[in-house]
Length: 124
Image (tube, rainbow, N blue to C red):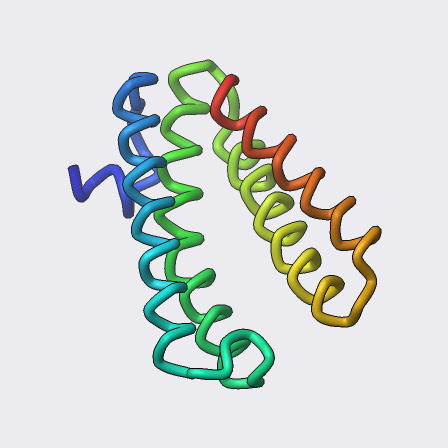
C-alpha cells in the first residue's frame, strides 16, 4: 500500500481510495493535535503555524498521489487531481489565517470552498 502514497502511476479503486484518504485524514488530525499539544499555545503561537505548515506539506504529496491514482481510474489527468487537491489545501490554509485575523465570514467562505472541494474529490 506504500506505493499508493508516493507514486503517481497506476490506478486505485474507489474503496482503496476512500480507505487511503481516511487514513491520511486521521493521521493528519492526530499529527495536528500532537503539534498543538507540544506548542502549548496552539495556533496562536507562530511556531504552531510553522509546525502545521510542515505537517500540511508532508501530507500533500501522499494526498496528491492517491488523488491522481483515483483520477487515472476515472480517466482524468493527474494534473487535474493534483490541482484540485492544491486548491483545497490552499483554501484550508487561507481559512486558518483568516479566522486567526478575525475575519470570520471570509474564513467561513474559504472553509465552505474547502468542504465542497473535498466532497467533489470523494464523490468524483
